[in-house]
Length: 336
Ligand code: P6P
Image 1: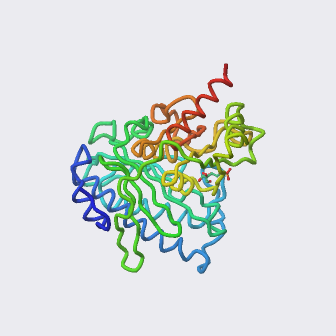
Image 2: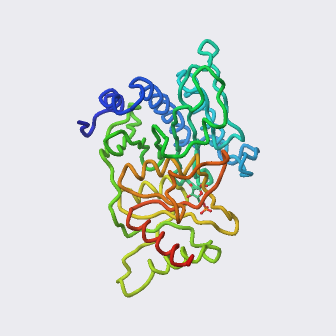
Image 3: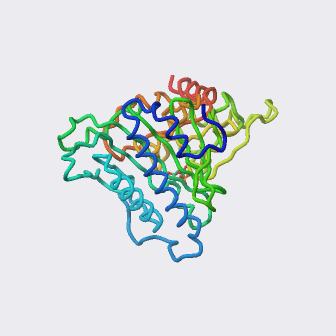
C-alpha cells in the first residue's frame, strides 16, 4: 500500500504488478518520462532568465508558432523514450507523422507506442503561467517484429495501458494512474526526487468550478450556452465560479482536486473543437475516469471514440462526473 512521501522510484517498484503486461517495461517507460520531466522542468523554470523565450521561428504541424521550449521539450522526451529501448514508435503533437523507433538489434521487437504532447499550454510560457506535458501509452497492435504502422497509434482510448501528465506549476508534479487510482508525485528540486504527495486522487462527484473560454460563447452549441447560463443563474445562490487558466493540465489538475469541469466545445475557429483526441483528450479522459471523473465530447464517452487521424480534434468536456452528465443532458435537450 503506497504511503505519502514514498519516492516515485519506490512506488514504481512496489506497483509493478499493476501494469498488466510486463512489470519491468512500464517501470522503464515511467522512469524515462521521470527523467525527461526533470530536464524539461529545469528549462521551464529558468525560461525567463535564458534567451529561450519567444518562438523558435518555426510553425508546428498545427499551424501554431512553435515556442523554443516546445521544441526543447519535444526533443528531450523523444530522446529519453528512445534511449530506453522499449517503444517501437512515438507520435508527438509537434510532428506531422509518427516516428518509427528502430532499435537495429531489436528488429522491431519493442511492444509499446507512446503519444505525447510535449508542452501543452505553451502559449503561456512567456507570461509565466503553468504548462504541462501529457503522455499516453498503448501496446502495439501490429505483430512484434513487423514495422510499426499508423494502426498502432489510431487506437481507442480504452486501449491505453497507461497515461499521465506533468504539470510545471508552483511545484512540478507527475500525475498518473496505476491500478489503485491516480497518484500525484511532487518534485523536490533540491535533490531531483519525486515524492508521493497526492495518493489516490479523486474528482469530487460534484464541484463548483467551470472552466471554459467564454470569449467563444457566441460560437458555442446551444446546449453549451444553456449549461453556462445554468451555472450563472442567480436563484441557486451562485453555486458556481468560473476559473480558466488557458492551460488544460492546470485547469484539469485544479478541478480534480477541488471539483469542477473543463469545457472546450466546438467554436468558429475550431469547428471540430481545438483539443486533439490522441495527444490531449484520450490521456486526460483515461486519468479522469481512473479518478471517478467523466470525459465526453458532449454526446459520447471520449475513450470509446475510434480515431481516424493522428491530429484529429474533438470537443472535450471533462471533470466531475455529475457535472459532465449535466452538460450531456443540456446537449441532448438542445439537439431535440
Ligand atoms: P484558448 C493550449 O493551447 C490548449 O491546447 C489547452 O492547454 C488550453 O486549455 C486551450 O488550448 C486554451 O485555448 O483558445 O482558450 O486559448
